[in-house]
Length: 86
Image 1 (tube, rainbow, N blue to C red):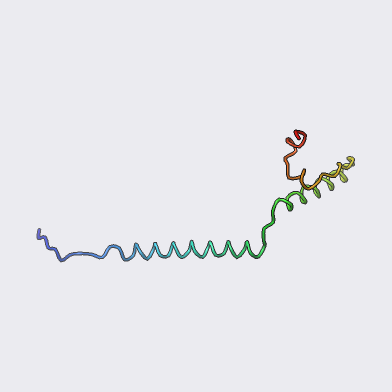
Image 2: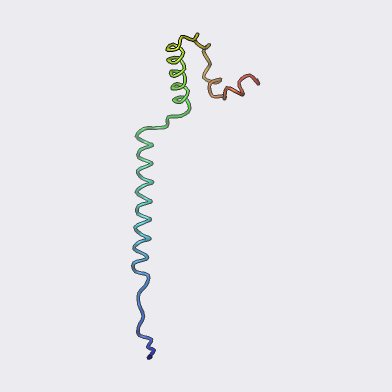
């Protein structure tokens, strides 16, 4: 068995290419998320509140229940279990 110091291999070449590809994919993903957020905009809690109000109105009309009293926008942001604590 002979030992020679000239049998060195470049081991980091393919590994660094994989790391660079992963970083590139992460950067593209972040850019896509930022573009989608800019395109759709910030929806915010008012969207969810409006959807919930519409669902409740439609279901109450469908099943013949009396309509609920209107809730102000400020009270709508408070969970129902905490509204009567004020």
